Length: 420
Image 1: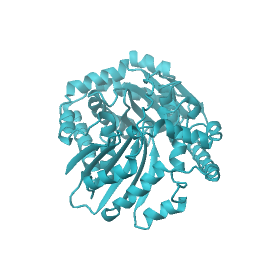
Image 2: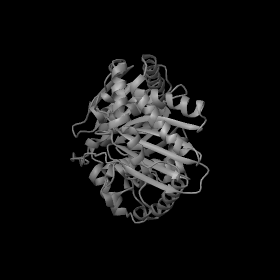
Image 3: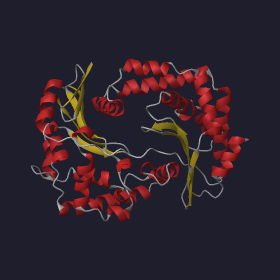
Image 4: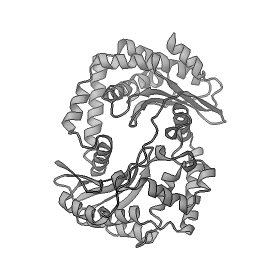
């Protein structure tokens, strides 16, 4: 499998990887415009725009967009994150040109029909309402807000109802004008693809766009803080976030190995101690996520009202214990889980296309898998224990609690336990 990368004169980037033996391909446009690129009055507009891309173009109605891909057995979708918006499809190899045409059409030529805007506004407001009715969704929005208070990175991707209710056609067009320049777009494809053919299609569709400078988002600042809401629910939801490295920092590999060993699987410390030994919860996990200039290690659990206090304090105790006696065997197991998860995921052309796009966004190039594996293998037990010490004692923290949480300790109390 060979990765090839090119760039048009206007800055539009193309990256692809041919995967021999496959009969299908994944292809998409990744735009470096997500939630953190919004001004406060625009909060939620990147996601709204993603929805509107499927509501009609100058050449196709909303139904024709869906039919064009589904008539050949493929699927098309999109998502908005805090740093990118992606539009992608999976099709058989003979239909790559069709998929490219449809995706290019929805990105370049949305009509923003006022009637469709109102229809989709209702859909998004329903989506927001559904999120608020899902405790283990809303708690992560609150945790993000406390981690990056009063910053674009801390705002919800869906946006608040009052802003979504007010977005106009001009607002949508204005966001496109600000952020959808050729230098902010990456065409990524993997599977049964021909790079030279992709280059030709990209030139025809995107070569005419004029370069424009993208807006650079403000640097993130992990602020920390606490959000707590009492509500009559079956479970008390507990989420703790700690400041961690961004994805351009090689320490990200140490952070990911640490969170895997702490709470990444059935053999992890938190799972074994909190669930298997003490029976305090059904779900508990730890994970590390990253952005360009910051990251978070997050611990989440759902438990009963009378056990949330015990769960919270044991979590802190396990974090402190990991700094003292994390073993070489645990680190080796977490390292193996991390490598296997990455390599197994890359057997999917969709996952591979997304990886290519993200690496080009981050680094401007695609580091080899061998380089990435070597960086994972280079993490020593001593590195993980030192990182665990930082997480247990020093790292700034944020806390979110939802449900019957009267018995849960405050962030201040947890900080005191960390320092003890």
